[in-house]
Image (cartoon, rainbow, N blue to C red):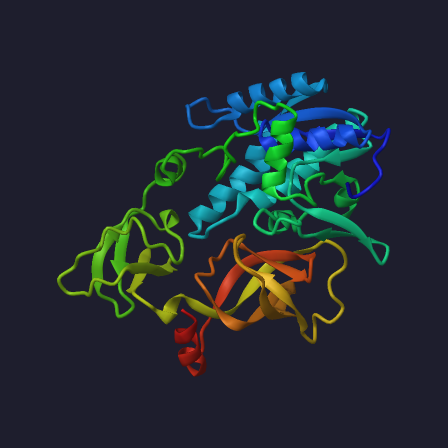
Length: 378
């Protein structure tokens, strides 16, 4: 455990999954006065979202561990603060990541406030992450299990909130977590990890989005302007996408796979290219709405060397970050990056420490002088 929590009142976000259940076990073993709080963020009962089943699993876990359970509904706040943003970004042709906003606005926002009203001194969650005090500041660190590390999704949480948060799983790997659950006879020990976003569930993504955003068909074009098909709406596609394009097996093209390489919102055109295309590679990007956990690096005006990642599962990439116009950031990578998607987040690291991140707004495509290097990187 990353701090002494003996006899301290800790309110645990209990999702109904194995991670938060084991977090409850570890908190109790560390001597904390634990209360569980389960939140509902989505209310549509359409058979896809597992909210009802998750609540029942949370109840069962609390009964097994003799922990009081509170239940709160944040569906309105979620729709106003997260889902509205999600739709707005897709409407503009971008690819958002609502998990980042959910952490900042809901789990470490209104959820944290509610936990305090319950008398909680500290908040705990089943996230795979760690905190530490570095030079007098609360720092967010990567989890020990690098395959499960969730610091990417937590980069927009304030240092103030992190200072009041415990991550019991930060030093564990997933196999250890499941073993602890088995050892304590928890019914969720073999429960499948949740994937994606609750409100979408297991349904096809296009099916879900089409109920909120009207289809807007348009041309699918090659980089030289040839129209080779039709798309149903730019919001249904993301850069680097290969599946679901419906343009394979053409007589006038090779058998190499097609990829989405650009989206032209001005004429509603989806741009695709084949094979090992350099059109998916970027030298860098411009990012807006930066969020730093502590103070921004002092050397941003001159350029700050650190590591960055443009998607959750990506390995850290060496980069240089500097201040651009209107408070934006210009990020230049040492190596070309593939399929960077506007609307996603670039997150910055210094070793194990997560510094913060920003919303990817524009791409800086690979320069002609780096074409050979870019081709080798594919």
